[in-house]
Length: 79
Image (cartoon, rainbow, N blue to C red; front, side, top):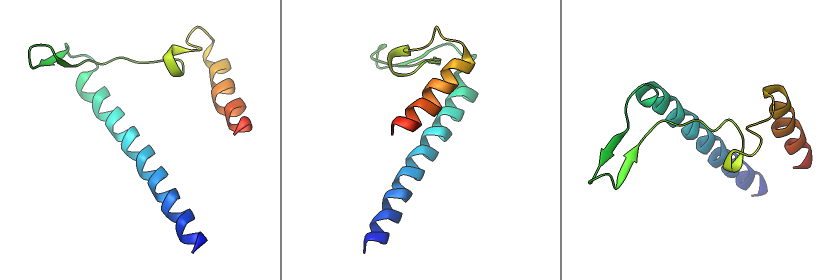
């Protein structure tokens, strides 16, 4: 029974990460060089933006190699 729970959790995580990456690719392909798209009198707007850091752009001022090390290896080690 425990292995079924493990595989179910693994499936949920994998599908969430997969959907996240697919929607990011779709947004990049369709919105990167396009003007913002507004709906309902600018209540809802689709606009392409990149976050080079982490949560709230933390680390966006760091070099790419330091960000990779910090956000991949250090956070993975802490987990």
